[in-house]
Length: 594
Image 1 (cartoon, rainbow, N blue to C red):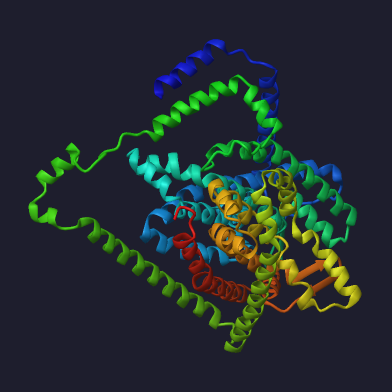
Image 2 (image 1 turned 30 degrees about the vertical axis):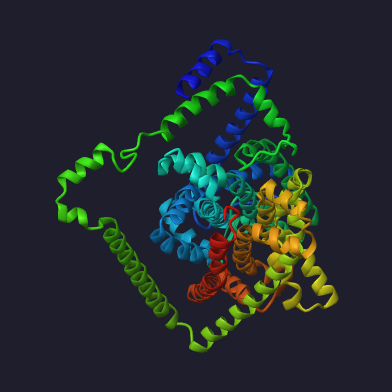
């Protein structure tokens, strides 16, 4: 393989002559690098807390705002990928790490973005004093928290449900754990991870309004960007400005879809568990341009050689009879060899981490209770718990309704490659469209027709998070092996039996991931869906989200902490008692490899 790569590299070096496609790609890359350089320079400008940053609704400023917003989104996405490649394999492969990481993800996913901003913005400002970099880091961190958990759970679910025949192939070729991850596990999980990465990018657009227009403790910090542009347009009831923002977002999403995600979708086709020659491949004009370049081929060969060197690191011990193991066995005393050191260390590690987590939880609860007790009466705590129950009922009903709607549609799209090609850009744009832009319409309708605000603001919670269910169902349907679909067709399996025996078991692991993430997103969205503004009109629905939103604006930190703690408790209980059980059931019983 290495000789083959060297041969390809030498042949490429000899015949390399840049062509027109190299020039086109070079111009695009230089333009992107120039935008990144300009955007990063704007992030480090001097800034003092209290200094107003003027946001103009003139559409001429939208290109500059767009560069800043997109840069924040992609920086957050880069950190999300780094966290995904670190935490997901650790949770999937190490039982002790799984017991620690999954509850941590449940808790972190339950902390609302607005609450995360109120906690972190002060710390980042003190970390980078007299610079705009502090608020910028707080905004990026808030976007990061809206993206990362879905991606981690997606890769974790893929690693837990790898078919047994693929695992056995890795064992036959004697791949090390390092090689197995890069050669088998990551390629298998890449299609699902890519779809969820696109969805996480879309989720970032939903929270970009909150992250760029920060309002904490009666202190407003507005960062230049589309989010702050939209926030100001909503406050001023400026419909033309909203229209300009929507048009700009459509153009931006179309650009990075064509230049990034569509080529990636075409590229990950080679990572499918099976190749179906009858299904048409995803066509992408930019991917075809990249394939025609010569400089890129040189870079591809160089990268392949470096990657092979990194992946194919020699194992210290390839098999139990290796010389190193033999030496160790000869040197160790016989009594020590008879002990199962691995089990002893594992039990000690489990005891240590469980004790540490328990002590940390108890200490945190005591500190939080003392912090809240000084200013809040027990009756208010019970009232907030009741508000959390009301929001929980809304979340459950919304997830059920969204599942009934999107599971059949997702199955239809995932089972047809033509439907996937046609609908993917449309779904991606709709998912990326900030649902809070539709909130003013809800305010106008509720005020005009005197509608029940507690009922008609509830659908606003699921507008931006229902796509987690749709995207994951699409991926699950597309991953069904062709021979299983043909077997069902040959045996005449139709109707209810087709759903019961083929579709639902196949998509269940993916649906569990999507539904759990959608539920967490609903809790987060309740903060903006239960406290809606349009100009002079403000609608406050009954629920935990409106409670947190109200006291975040006035900077009442004990009540903010109480609201976040109650929301975290509800989300964690739902995840542990419901979603995690479904998740484990999906991994253990409904894997297509069983």
